[in-house]
Image: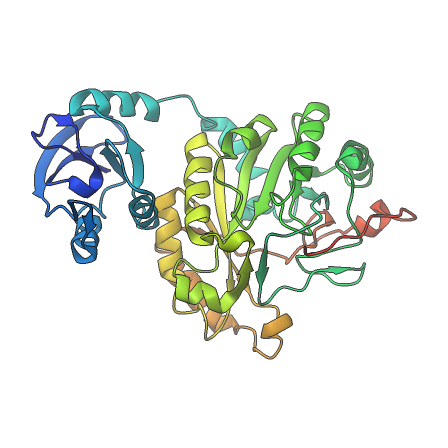
Amino acid sequence: MRLAFVSNDGVFVSQHFGHSRRFVIAELDENTFTYQLIENRENDAPCSLGEHDEKKFEKSVSLISDCRVLFAVRVGSYAKQRLQTSGVQVLEKPGFIEELLAEYIKYLRRPLFGGSKRREIMDDHPCFSAKAHNSKGRLHLPVSPACNIQCRFCTRSQNTSENRPGVSAGVLKPEEAVATVSRALKLCPQISVVGIAGPGDTLASEHALKAFQAVHRAFPDLIKCLSTNGLELPGKAQALWDTGVRTITVTVNAVDHEILGKIVSWVKDGRDLITAQLTGIRECAEQGMVVKINTVLIPGVNDGHIAEIAETVRKAGATRHNIIPLIPQNEFADTLPPTCEQIEKARNEAGKYLEQFRHCRHCRADACGIPGVSDVSKELYQNRELETFSHG
């Protein structure tokens, strides 16, 4: 991996990104943790006397786009957003380059969720591993009542008949989570994963975190998994880790704002969804979680964009990818779903960057059982009144 340092003398990081006239580039071997300073890249500083030159700015970003990390005294919010979108992590820290490298290597070598435990969890997770898909069970707790974005293909519904994301018989209170897991294990002892995937977004409220806290205390050996659109993911990695979450799925349907506008009609507070997603993915991966990306394949909209999505999220730290065919609904009700050939083409293109998961079942937000083998969700919630939910 490569790292860039904003330095005037090649020794000390002492400048803002906008005033940078030189980037010192280091090459770091992630297996041996040895490094060498390989080159200096001269830069035409994009900011001068309070003025900002956009062409120079783009050139500066392009100059270090092959680096995974940038060290600088300070990076403005706009520059930080552009760099992170390009897959460059920003660390605002002055100091001697050699000392910053040593500190960063120490950070990389910290103990993480990994090794045999990581492999064991992946082998037991039916939504991440083909090996577990027809033998291990999963329970989705429908505790999240609301969403913070509106996708043009999404119609959330409360019923017991449809088999698709965004649908459940109702919403559980977080206080009901432990009892629900207990009942589910009696109905399906093969359950290895407790996941939260809706029916709204899991981080649009505190309900998912509260549910995971209680479930992790009662069932520490069960895998905890969260699915989210990623808008509220930045800053949540440590909190999720503390509640036992070790695997996370982020739905990323575009990494280009123009394409995203054709897919998402509304984002809470007009925030930048793409930047939030990439920041959250990076933070969760650095925390040690396994990050999978879900992408809804929409013919004529993002079908030519799949490889770019895969490459971008891989740079942020994702390791698995699940391409899901569009279910025609809402504004895309008249759009034909992708053919098998289109899906396979997208998977082959994305597979150059990320391992592809090919066994998705379009699960409900209250699914329970072994995917493709058994479904005990109706029995689990039989004769129980659940709360309603909304998209607000």
